[in-house]
Image 1 (cartoon, chains in turn brown, green):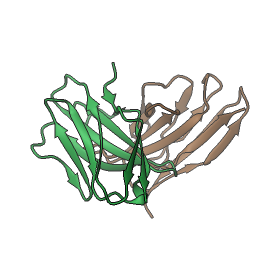
Image 2 (cartoon, rainbow over the protein chains, first blue to last red):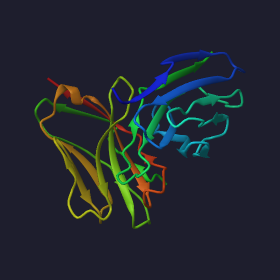
Image 3 (cartoon, rainbow over the protein chains, first blue to last red):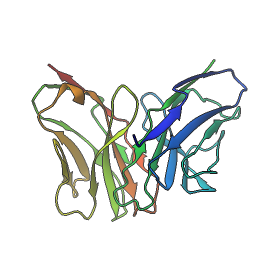
Image 4 (spheres, rainbow over the protein chains, first blue to last red):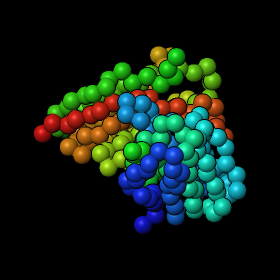
Length: 114
Length: 116
């Protein structure tokens, strides 16, 4: 089935450790996105990438890093510089020709910092 | 100021009845798009419906319709004949400008519970 796969679904991390969240899509979409969701808040864009080897900061990029070496993969690293990393992280993709703005989402990764 | 406002934190509806989820927006850009997404307890966001600012007719997708009132800057989602599977969080979102703008602005969401 075509879709977006995020892993791991749940992740625990000690303070000061970096952690990488995986996002893979087989929809042949050009663009990929990382969002953060906190309780009682809307989604906030961390990073997005419209083509391979290129990405742009979203609204809350500080403390995060990404790479886009392959079209189907867009991993997110939550670094120790991120002051409050406990959150639900959602990866999404969209076609390059983005007429309607429909995003296709994965099932998310829940990160808890102990 | 909030660009997307969803004033109903929680809503209840009886199965088979219709329900309206409110969304108001604020933008000075004449070109924009409005979206509704559903987030069930599994966590993924599911695209429901889209309305462009220049679209003359209200968008419809099956049981979902968007009541677009441009002058009032509102884009309410109407779900007809509610089903138990409609219980979820619903988010309204907006894209300002054309498709080159990849950033969506999201509301805080409305939790919908469908009662049997």
